[in-house]
Length: 186
Length: 429
Image (cartoon, rainbow over all chains, first blue to last red; front, side, top):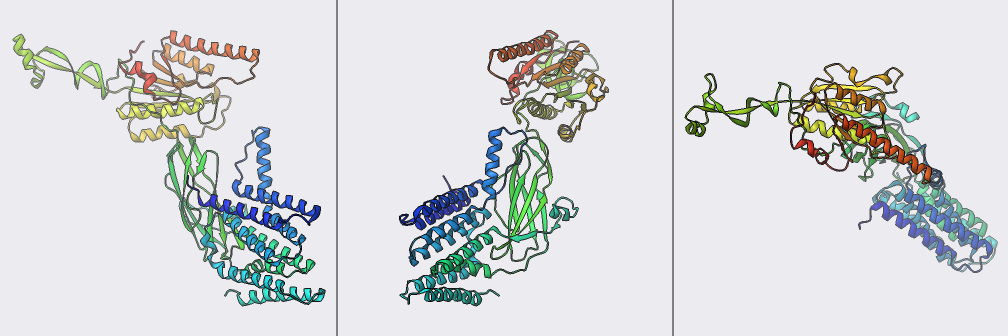
């Protein structure tokens, strides 16, 4: 059986969503009750975002004489289509990651996986080919480079204290802004 | 919608200008979510790696440019405006004036229109589709989506797709029913009377004035007198197809009306192929009819009559009888082939009248549904009574000398008609 490009994009988005949820949740111990709740929310968002992609964006033609079961099914599908599950997944996984103690390389990989997931979702819902992302390739490369820089900066031993932490954040923000200004396309 | 109102009136295939409605794309909204969440968590937890998580999204969002095409040209053509049920066709869509944006096309089909997988996007695309049920069908709406280079802004516009005529898919029919008495009009059926055809009927003695080239020399030698070959005259016949569209029951796509029209299309094609004159009467709330005629163009007139919009019947047209049709619509001596489920009492009475007036009538019964209901004993009894009534109607018609065959819409029409196509059908007055 041959798998079409649309099915491949939906499958890739599903795998990346599952990887993001599992990666941000591990280990679940030490995150408390909120961690379990966020894990459930993230898993639900992942499942429903893939369901939304599989359902497609086009609602079926409205039929007046549907039986109640079919009508409820159509209404449920409409809600699944209309809710931004991918945004929910992003927020839930990042908050879940933040509940853990600082582990910069782990967070960096999660950020890269989330970015890949968002791109896969976009390709699946717009039924576009991977080639449409070619113009963005330099920006994506620069963004991943900044991500690596930020992770590296976070892993450096630094003077402890809130002022030092704040300075590190401001430095990372400045690096992002500088990257944005330098790579601003014509 | 506003975009639809912007469409200029244009003929089929002509380019028209549509104005897209621009908005932030869903992709951009998701990137904003990622960037904001990463930055907020970084500030709250004071962990710089979350700024790194937000960095790619921030860079992509910073690349957004405001240039957008104000309007684009769209041209839509169909590869065929006349189709049969289930036949594949293409929509050729050309979008112009979109600059360096990318284009996505999506068909929102109407009832019975099935878009098939095709090329997903592009300025010039062919979108395959098919129509699954006969009728004059609007194909639906075409949604055009434009994305900028960074996929951060998207513009939507909709265009009405053209209307196509979907003819009923003709059933299979190769044989024809031929009456024993044919009108004296030149055709292809061998009649009982002698004439100038090619079918040999016998040998007779020469009479001065006969054509000498028809002399049968072996018979002349045996009998000692000049003998001639005789041939059958070739005649045409008038066939009137009566399609009963008054009772549309059962599953859409295989209702008695669907079967009647598919059978009528096959019959019209089969009789026109042997140069018979074919007419059509559609019996619904009102009566629509077409006088018998010949040729390929007449076939399309018949098919167009099947699709003609009959509108709502008024009180007067409900009482219109087939027998009130002018002589041109129901020529004397015609073979009348009736496709009917025999559920309408008026239809049954009309068939009796036709028979009593001397027409040769053959009914093709297309009833393929039963009343549905609960499975209790009372419903079962009601169904049984209904079946007995139907059997009684059919029995009374047979008793009047109207042959009746059943057709399920799946098999070839040749099978149920076989008893009447093997030999000529005797016309009884």
